Length: 116
Image 1 (spheres, helix red, strand yellow):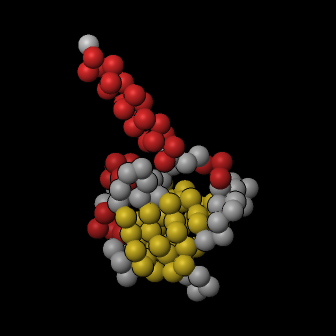
Image 2 (cartoon, rainbow, N blue to C red):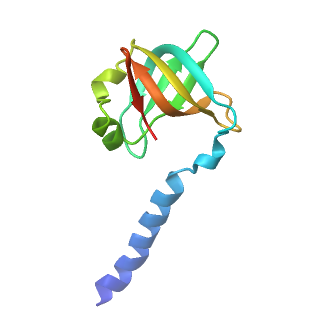
């Protein structure tokens, strides 16, 4: 009985930390869609969302993708996000970070994947 009493606060803290780490989509401006094309400089295929750093002609963007499971299910395996590859992304810019974008869809090697 005493163990479960001590375990409850620890579990509550873990759940709160996980919820806090996952950001809301209201931080992105859905009224201003942006289309970017560039070279993948870095990629991550992890929870809660994958990402790429996309170098365009004017700057490098942090592009927030979907969770890995969704990307796999929709035909976008980790290998397709290889550094040096070309990508085109349609998404929404972050309201306060001028180099971050939430991707709605991504095109790599003539294959478009819907992420949302």
